[in-house]
Image (tube, rainbow, N blue to C red):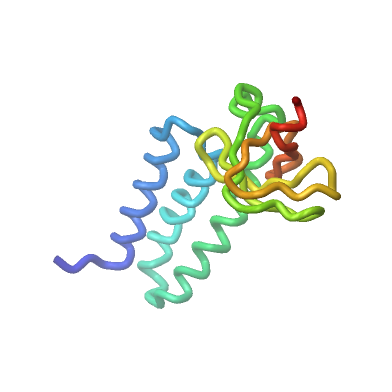
Length: 143
């Protein structure tokens, strides 16, 4: 079964929109933005048959829609307020960022004290969120 590029984009768009609606942890509208962009590219693929340009347009439109959708996300998301613990996935070097598993997802994180490094696989306490970066401290700071 050979699918046309427009049909592939249509399937991808529908799948991403369904993921946005059904995934228990919110994707913060990113999957929905990517899905809407794919649906738009499905229509464009009929006119513009060059796959490389379709992918480039999809990335551009997805990025723009994702940036636009950020205004609809509450600054103090309930998902961020419910949990205060995370686990470092990578080391967080002093004054730099690393990755933290928090609320089932991987977040960019930095330590509240820029002179402190946090090792990988260490429990951390999430103090606040600054954009898409979590500000954390090692759990042992509370003891």
